[in-house]
Length: 391
Ligand code: GLA
Image 1 (cartoon, rainbow, N blue to C red):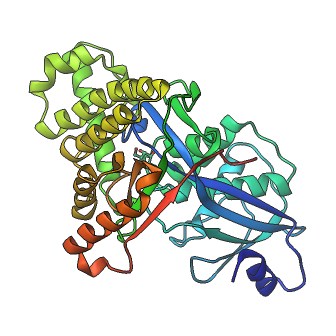
Image 2 (image 1 turned 135 degrees about the horizontal axis):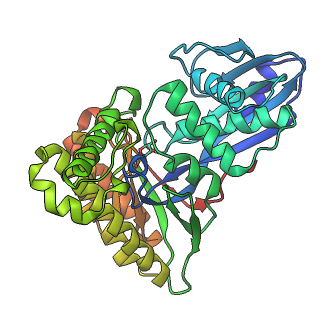
């Protein structure tokens, strides 16, 4: 069933009035640093979440999914409860609108789908953004793009309960086709840097490990706390002012302080900080390589970023680490790393389009030799970049 057929099947007496598409994202360099107010880069993909809907005069939201079982149906109210089901992302979007002072009276009937498997491409931010976009449309609200990002972030941080940064939402809103988004998550300044005229063609390879992502249960929040603890201790060693640990970020601590006092930090905290500072300079170098059109240099920096995520940030599952290793030795891959939180999910790579068949064959063969039980679950996709969500 496609979306239209599903809509007709579930809502027999009404027709869809509109459609929202929100892309997925990948972050080639600048991983795990947005929650420390670091520098990030990103692309939106030509795959994502599609939602078709019809406005409801009642304050009722009713959604079906092509990917998840069951129907989600609830009445609009400002204090929803979390249910720990796929409907929580719609509840989170609704709650966030109220929280930010918007009045919503109209609900909608909708059917939603994701066009790639879940895990590592930030489908959760894409889903929240799609619900926010629909709720705004049916209630005649037109928040600024920066406010939509804030609301989507609030939804995941405060309602779903993850200490994430703003990388995913910003990419899915600000990115432009064939441009690299370069964003400073401290002050939200950003640039969309076009492909250079010297640049060879490229595609974005996505390698799904076959193990779905589960951020809420992952070590994601623990890593954020380790970074905060490092920043807090470094501030104290360096005689800087500090207040609440929850409002402390590595971005506020000059790198010289880290170099001077890192020996006093517990090893784990020091490694997380090492990742942060080295990623900061990698993003800058990567942006320069992209500007010059040098995909080899850009790719190399992505690989280095991936290594730092493995050895300093210590994220990644055995499956993702194996994929990373395979990518390092595969012809036609300029560079690659885990995508997203990197505890499960997928790896992304910048690839030469002339090699896609060969890459798929080599990576699949080697990966399934290591994890034969994931046959049928592991998958490879080649994507192009795209624009962010249209609001
Ligand atoms: C997840 C989070 C983002 C970011 C990445 C890692 O996708 O939602 O905020 O921290 O992991 O770079």
